[in-house]
Picture 1 (cartoon, one colour):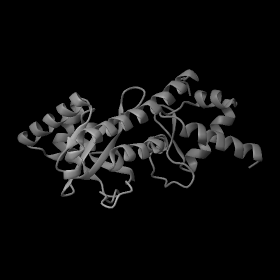
Picture 2: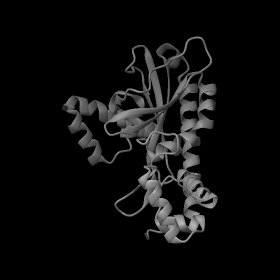
Picture 3: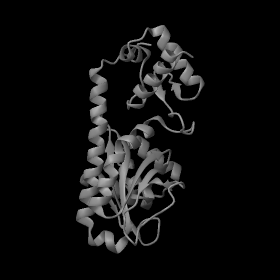
Picture 4: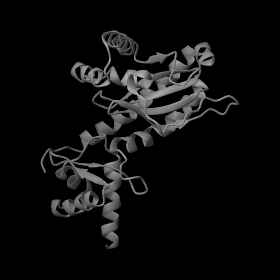
Length: 255
């Protein structure tokens, strides 16, 4: 590949990585100022190398960046990059451990964590997933699901009528308050507060969770709640800014 060809591939990767939504061929060609024929060859190359995928509607979305595992999720990559500068601030303001979580099927998957510089820390292995309705991040993300999807979730998990009522009460609280405090976490002795991270269209993409030892969290609940809300809102603003930038560039559904 020529030097110019390599440069175009890098330009394409960077442009796709900065987007929240998938992109049509015409969008890419316009943004990079390339002929559609050349753009199509570049996109096909990324698909063949499993850096991107072509959706049923003909649009393309990034799956991973060089060095990342092929099974990475396209929106998660962008989310973590935008969230990074705000996580440290959330740790500093709360004094507790901060996590970024997403809804992956019926489970919560933790993408990242940042711990405070204090002798007693709350830490956990973020590789195992959690049942969504058992953790604060899951509750705030379930609260943003349409009613039909939430009902389907309850059915798949086999929740009985009492469990459904309890979950709906938690979801109502999360929707009302904009966050959810889980006083009794999956890990014994831990509590967590989560707030949703939303994109420019108001869709909840992830949750910012702050967790710590139960007595310490309860003693500092207002401060930790403010830190969770501020962090989630700051990341949401970054996503909205990207969305507005993409819209101003002129989007097309043509392929």
